[in-house]
Length: 170
Image 1 (cartoon, rainbow, N blue to C red):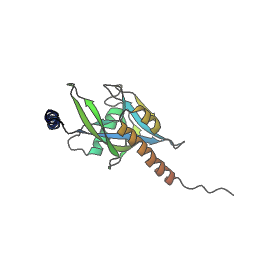
Image 2: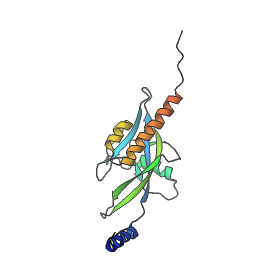
Image 3: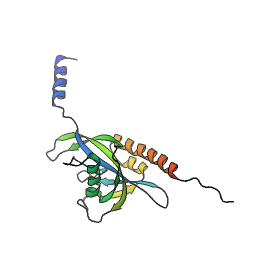
Image 4: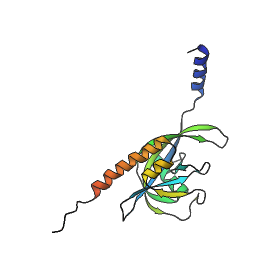
């Protein structure tokens, strides 16, 4: 490596910012009749790409509480949020001033138990319930795709172990 290339690399490292932290909710429901797992996707307000509810840290709120709050504000859903993270993903966010920053998003599972008709960002996004496989096709971030796949496996195990064994009638 030439001295100039090494110096340029060192300068880039000096100005690299750590990722900005955000918190998200992977909202899900299990259909009562079919037992089918569905997850909530919505479009972002700026680019229209498929995302999950997420936002910046909030004063006096734990990470999982922020995730639940964002689900309510952005998608109008509420429910039971897990306190342990499912994992995280990163993405490039373009700020209002045009600056691009890397965001690290901690994701928390939220079992949806209800929805509200009026919520903060109503009409600003398209919201859809889809299968995990469909979510994987729609989202752009590879790490978020992997979270959907891991969540699908986890829920398949949970749902299959929670179903009582059927005893055939005689």
